[in-house]
Image 1 (cartoon, rainbow, N blue to C red):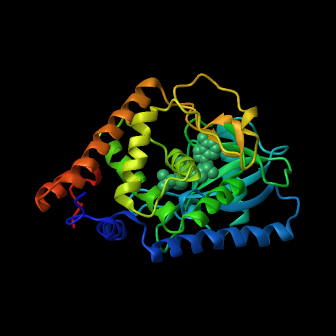
Image 2 (cartoon, rainbow, N blue to C red):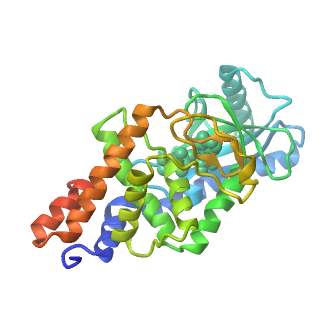
Image 3 (tube, rainbow, N blue to C red):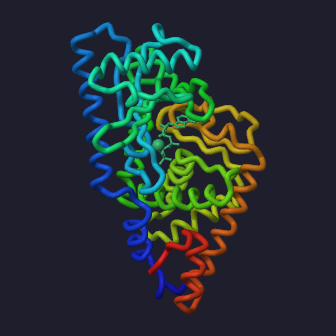
Length: 321
Ligand SMILES: Nc1ncnc2c1ncn2[C@@H]1O[C@H](COP(=O)(O)OP(=O)(O)OP(=O)(O)O)[C@@H](O)[C@H]1O
Ligand SMILES: [Mg+2]
């Protein structure tokens, strides 16, 4: 195999320069989110009956899988399910008013009602944080009904257990698990930019990669690992139902007949890919096939120009080595 022009370390450099959220930016965003959480915690100490229970950094910033260009900042906010309204518009209005009360220093325009979340903007930096409600009724492992940011429906799940699930995979493949997630999310973002119908959710990327890593796929060589990921999508074609035994017995998972079945690691009645149609599935497999072929060709190419041309099919025109 020809590795002369583009090798593992070139992909590492590209990821540092173009793909990853910079360490300092991630730190600033994390600190801002944590200050918000700490303020709420002290408010809760003084107002124990207030119906917000806990705020927690969730999403890619918490998992260390954020991209430079496109990741948002997600905070999960646990709200008492007995007190919170069930109708979505009312729930969002209720949450916004609670946040206004808990953070009286925020100006009204800093707290914005969105369809399924409340956005909080910081004045100095202009950073925006999405506060996503979770209806909570006291589960010790912080299971609750997470409001889907795709449809607004409540999904029974546990964000802290998701974070623990990802942390475990990161421990087995330090550096590489998170880096490959970011590279594949970057790949998916390019496909989404070209075709607005293309769908490949970040959480799905993490779960598919976790499935491969759990089965022993090596992640420490990026050209090889990327080839394995895309070749798996092509050869499997989503025939496999992906499930995990961290928090449930896999034999209790019942097929739901959807084109793609990837069970939430904490609830195997929640198919993370249930909104994906057969057309969505075919588009992913087709894109994976093109990408897998491009990687194979890049690894066989002789000249530097040719090698770069193939890698640019994978990572776009900004790819360089
Ligand atoms: N369908 C779902 N079922 C259960 N939990 C979900 C689902 N979708 C999202 N989540 C929760 O929300 C979190 C964030 O979602 P997602 O992974 O899609 O975005 P992200 O990791 O923040 O990526 P980015 O913002 O960079 O695209 C997940 O880690 C998971 O805890
Ligand atoms: Mg996010």
